[in-house]
Amino acid sequence: MANSPDQDFVLKTVRERGIHFIRFWFTDVLGTLKSFAVTPGELDSTFSEGVGFDGSSVEGFSDIEESDMLAFPDASTFQVLPWRPADNGVARMFCDIRNPDGTEFEGDPRAALRRMVEKAADMGYVMNVGPEMEYFYFKNATSPDPIDEGGYFDLMPLDNARDLRRDTVLTLEKMGIPVEYSHHEAAPSQHEIDLRYGDVMSMADAVMTYRLVAKEIAVQQGMHASFMPKPISGESGSGMHVHQSLFDTDGNNVFFDASDPDAHNLSETAKHYIAGILHYAPEFAMVTNQFVNSYKRLSSGFDAPRYTTWSMLDRSSMVRIPMYKPGKETAARIELRSPDPAANPYLAFASMLAAGLAGIEQGLELQPPLSAAEVEQMSAAEREKAGVRELPHNLGEAIENFENSEFMLDVLGPHIHQFYVENKRREWQEYCSCVTEWEIGRYLPTL
Image (cartoon, rainbow, N blue to C red):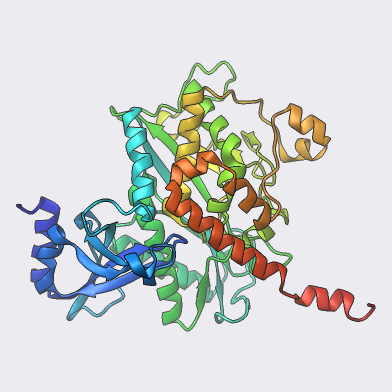
């Protein structure tokens, strides 16, 4: 079988630039990046035959009795790694994981997202996303000691973190990942880099690359970059606010409608999509917020959402409609503010796309907008009447919602769904049995 143009480009670039190692990247179910390297002499055959590896060593993939798997590199994701030496250089490609018989492996997170992308395409849609990812710089990986005392948008002289952020942006752009802007966030040593809007699969790959690049650049300066959702008590946590919209096959933004009777410039399609996100958010929360620590961010305020609300301006709402460029069709989008940057982007994006498409398919009606302040003043009965639900308070509640969700079972498939339930239940049980410093300080002196 002849190589594709992308594959020919990879082989030519490897030869001309003296690339000596080609790293194959993929993620486990929880979103941890995995990698192994092949040499140039083996590269050509991998496009058609894949490379075998032991799937039992990868979290959530397979048991040792069925451990043989194949990684097939996606040539369109080829990039040289700028932080590696130029001589005998190193490049990477993301991979799709298959069974030995060539069929798609149902535990591959990239495959789960591709299924939703294909479903959207069958409905005539292309999903574009633009994540805003927040993270912290610390002095090391053992304690959350900030390296600056800056706040939102602060500019400080001789700021080491500013230089780290700049070098991260430059490295991402060298790898073909365009950055829209970057800035200091609200908490000490907290930063944000926003990636420019793009198709959802490319963006999931870009998120994985972003997290690694931020950590690599920090390590070079003896620092640690952390995407932990809530590393410091009493300060803002880190979110991954996902701007998203659907376009049709002619390149028109189907979320935009200048004649919207509610004066929001939102089409009926957009309203059904938002309604789907709001309806299924408590069920997909365990994917977008998958760790015990994730719920410390959601429950602590600091503009993190607690309820399934939407609004035009309120940044404490779960879904916000950005109005930076009102009336501009291409800028019409929604912003989902509940996810955090520790999520597996393939499964997080798949879940929110599936929820939005379900809202369109089912014709779910969008309730009137409500601010977080308005919802806080409501009784439980009033919230129920308004169609407002609470997001899970902790991982235990998230597990229960997810486990009982036929919707999430269908979106992710039995393999990933079962693994998530079992893995997260263990994590929650371990956490619940752990005696914390807070308990020692509060109870030991008096009990």
